[in-house]
Image (cartoon, rainbow, N blue to C red):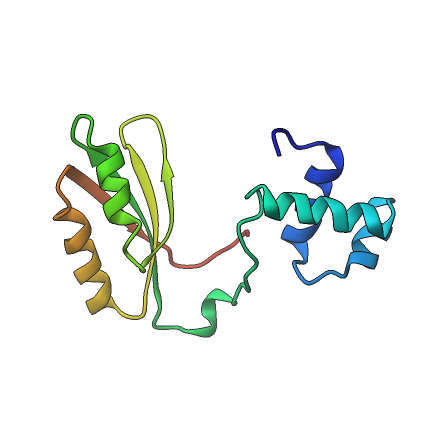
Length: 143
């Protein structure tokens, strides 16, 4: 799928709000036929625009879980190699390239502070990582 149209964008927004919404509900909310929703969903999945479906769990369910944002600076032209290495870290829930003083932003989750400390050490030991700054996420006030 080369470009998203208005129906695709509306469908994706609706699924972000309620990923379990039925095709009939989505069609009604978007003002289109169920066949249109099914067709657009199939194309979004087959094109790789939708890469999967998941469940979101309330952050405070596990009070010991550690969540953080890690800003990472990379040496020279090693970005692709660093990204390949970091993709293998199960504690990294999302990884973003960015501009400015930092090259990457990693969203981290671990089950306790000891594991959090270990994953920070592993990130900092990746060849090409020259600096990092990490902030713990204390509570989510808007999602």
